[in-house]
Length: 229
Image (cartoon, rainbow, N blue to C red):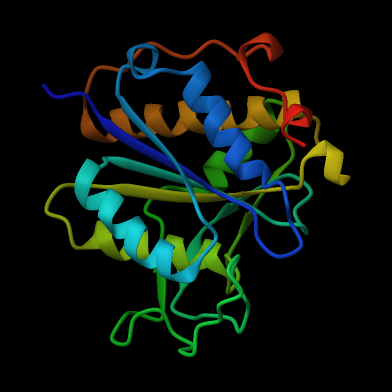
């Protein structure tokens, strides 16, 4: 049996945000949790916060890795904890990307559905995080910027595949050095808990043997967010 293919992504800087904590989370998870430890093929990618790049690179990564599970992280300045997104909407806001480009179209796909939902329970994931002392809530709107754009494209791609593919998007608050409510250890512990929980859910749905569970990540095993500034 081939190992499960997992894709996790974060975003780079964008106007008003010079350090995107979602990129740091993805890099830290990949460094602390190699594929051999997860029992799956882990692919990690930090995407440029650009309409054209995400529109091309996102689907290309999915076709290349054919993931069973896709976990996207993005930054929300309004989030006060981990915000699990239930849905992506076929809409685009009039907002500049990291290159100062603004899309003319107000929809993502001309003939796409108005809304696409994750097949995994966002409420159960949020409850799991709160049980472990981490602030978490569900949301019905991933916004109109590149987070929603990527989420919609991934859900649409997953819906067209013959093999099952689950997609989840999680918004995280700003890092502690940008005035966010959570410290580095809490952010990474939460991201790690999300990853382990989703892997367990997918394994259960597929009827496969659960992989070894990850131990909590200690501060000594990840790159300091402050060191990136």
